[in-house]
Amino acid sequence: MTNKDINYQNELNSVWTENLANNKQPDGKALLDHLRTVHQHHAGFTEKCASTCRDESGRNSYEWLSEIVPDINGTRVLDLACGSGPLLKILHDRNKNLKLKGVDMCPEELALAKARLPENAVDLIELKAQNLTAINDNSIDVVLCHWALTLMDPITPVLNEVRRVLSAGGRFSALVDGPMNAAPGYTDVHDLIYGYVQAKLPSYGEIDLGDPRIRGTDSLSHIVGEAFPEANVTVETSVVSMEGPIAEVAETAAGFFYASFILPPEIRKTMLSKLSNLLTVSKQSRDFERQGRFSMPISRLVITK
Image (cartoon, rainbow, N blue to C red; front, side, top):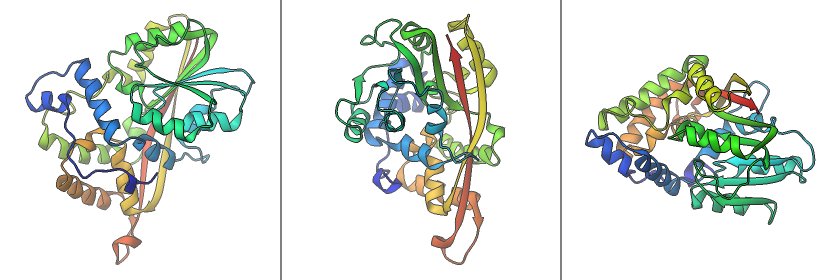
């Protein structure tokens, strides 16, 4: 999938954005509506962005997260908010004898996952993370969650469900946002995109998607520690980057921010032009020869039950 496959031609509206426009506090149902709307219109966008950026060892964030799973036949793995299935594909390709499950609330994303995975290789289920009704107690050895924990609100029921389904000695690992100052230039990218969004919706940022405690290392460790009081909790931080033609780099960088999806097409075009100037690392006489670089911080949460 390329950025050209993702349709940005229409302004995205949801109950959540309507609440913000009217200075109302969105509730959990409005958040779910907004996330479903984004993924219905842009299914697969997370994979496009996350698979492109790599760390100093050449790993993308899916590969870094997958390292938590032991290469032992029969290991039972749940991918929470599995999206289009890239993490499940990595795990299946590595060891076809893993017992894999993927859950997501968006049927469009699950359809992409089903299409890319061999038949009967993975059990794919449409579920919300707060209510994993189809999964038995103590039935999973490893729960993984790639860049979705940040968006889950309320978060406590999610963590309670993860604890319930994990077996004794099981592990839960989530890929989340890292500290903004850990990656050079990332704060500038964030501020530029949010500046355009807040011109449209001034309260965006003050009222953000998901539970803001997941975005800070200390607060993340605290809330997870409350849900898993006897567990060992660690948070590691890394930086992933991409380089390439500036138009592709700018589009990918913008795609990491849910905020960018609510911009009208003409404003989004202007924002991308400014972002291209910000991320350019070598200037040539013609736009298609300009090269850009984007870096972003990521953190890997690991809990051993």
